[in-house]
Image (cartoon, rainbow, N blue to C red; front, side, top):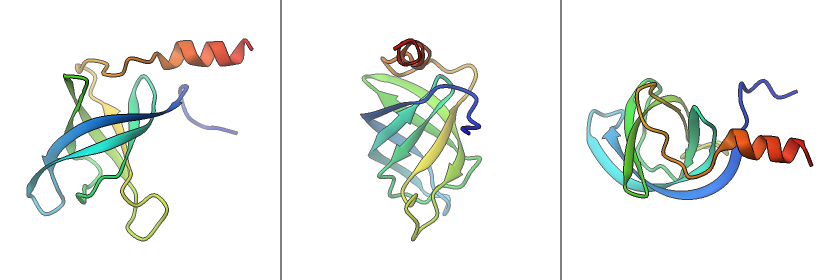
Amino acid sequence: MDRRRETRIDTALPVRIWGVDSFCRPFMQMASVRNISSLGAILQNVRAQIRPGEILDVQYDGVKAQFRVVWAGKPGTIEAGELGLERLAEEPYLWDIDPARCGHSVGNG
């Protein structure tokens, strides 16, 4: 049984991310969004080491929003290079896909 609070949509979207890594050094890089929901996303191909709780700027298609890192894949595991993000409440929704609408379409056949 899936314990997630909302529908997630698998995707592959290129994004630019920047912030401060675990060593207090600023970084900027390109990454990919593996899946999205209305509240957050999972990034992959992240080279910087980022701790949960950090705030990252994410830019997609010319629009920027801030996200809090809620989990980070551990080095040496299948989740290495992945980050779970939660969009800050006051920030805009970035994606051009509506997970709620896609979830209803799938659910209704």
